[in-house]
Image (tube, rainbow, N blue to C red; front, side):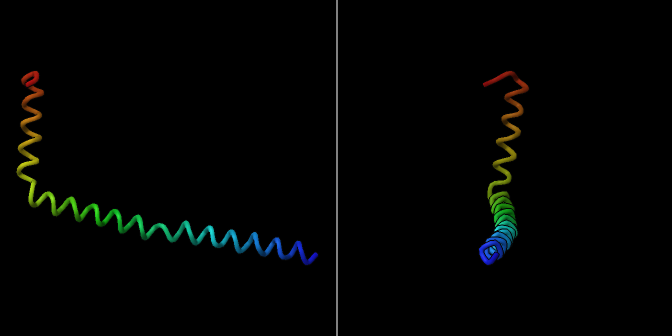
Amino acid sequence: MLIRSQLRLRDHVGGLAAQRRERGDVPGWVMITLMTAGIVVVLWQFAGDALVGLFEESLNNVRKGGN
């Protein structure tokens, strides 16, 4: 009976630890998402005109049929 109680307690505590690990990862993903958005904003300020020009040039080449 004591062994069964210990096993149940171990399973319960193990389940709680797994839940904490899953929840604990969410702030990491939020931080990665915000940092990525920040990098895009900074890069867009420096290279936005060049990127728009590159995109428009590519579209024009596709419309003309190559080269």
